[in-house]
Image (cartoon, rainbow, N blue to C red):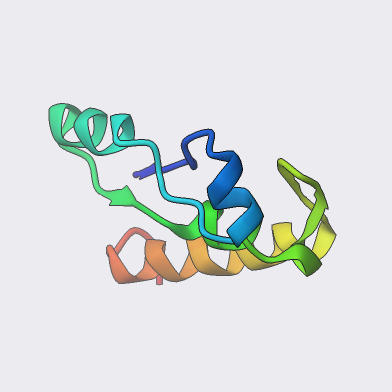
Length: 79
């Protein structure tokens, strides 16, 4: 499983909308692994989940963990 990360985007950060860098989709396809997209960008788009402009805070990491665990279950990697 590959987790997409947002592309650097000052406007997107200011507007609270960060999209994954397109490289992650290409790498996931080339490697034949599932891509979990948008999760980190969604966390970093919410001010209350950020410690600073580019890092989640403790609540942000909990949300990231919850969403990744959800994806792992959906993909059948964990029960």
